[in-house]
Each structure stands twice: as structure tokens, then as C-alpha cells.
Image (cartoon, rainbow, N blue to C red):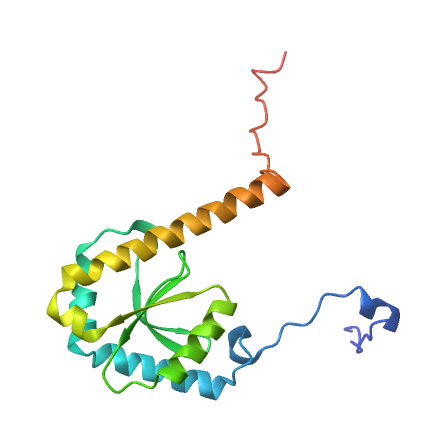
Amino acid sequence: MTERKTLQLRDPSEGADAAPVLKRKGRGWEISEKRLDAIHERARYLRRHSTEAHKALAARFAKEDFGKYKFTRHTVVGSAILDFVSHPLGLAIAIDEEGQDDRVAKRRDKSLASVGVEVFRIPAATILDDVEAAMQPIFAAMNARYRDKETARRAHQSKYGSTPRRTRPARRDDRK
């Protein structure tokens, strides 16, 4: 016969030392799953029906080899849909279309900055006029962001030290 399983309650004294429970809403962003699904659906729609400026910049990005710093288009970060994002750099490129509300964009940029994503804005007209000229400030922003990340990494290593690498154990033949 099988044992009967009963509900085991934790001792209340363990509550202070226990790890906090992860919130299951919005994959960590405290957004409801329904709203998050709608945001992802909107991003999918935007990828399929891109503006001419998005298409031109995406084609230019496709020609470049950024390595691990590649850009993805119409990516969802929190409750925002960003035009182009490089997650390893923490850099987003927003294309400013005509008639866009600047107050909403500034509020969104501020909330993204609080989680470590810097937003670089570029007008759509600049991209449509000359894509190569539009790429120069983007490259400069990428280099600046890379230097910031590298400086922060070095400061962290000097403060906490680098983790020692594991060495392979000696073989029997080597031990004598």
C-alpha cells in the first residue's frame, strides 16, 4: 500500500531566512499574461508590417557583423516594444516617426533606463535620407555603451577579484 501524502507547512521561524517567492506575472515584470500576450502579438504585427525606415535600418544591420552584439527588431522589453535592441549591450534604437507622442516616449525611456537599457533615438527622415549617415551616431552609441560596460566590468573585477579558474585534476600518470 502507498503512503498517504500530507501537506507539510513550514515553520514560521524559517520565513525570514527563506528566499523570496518569484512573481509569476509577466515573466518577472509584474504584467498580466493576457496583457503580455497582447504586447507580443502587437510586436509580431509590427515585424510583419514595418515602416520604410525600419526596413532600411534592418537591411543595413543585416549587412553588418556585430558578433554577439546583434540587434533584434520589434523586441518586447517589459511592456514596451522597442524598434531595435542589442541585449548584451543594453542598447535600444528607437525610430522617431512623425506624429509620435514625445511624453510617452520619454516616460518609457526613463523606465527602461532604470533596468539598464539605454535608448538611442533617431528620426525616421534621417534614415530615409541617408542610411550610412544615420549609422555613424549608432556606431558611436554602440562604442560608448561597450566602453561603459567594459569599465563597469573592470571595476567589478577589481573590487571583488576575478573568480579562479578550475584546473583539471591531475591524471594518474602525472601523479608520482
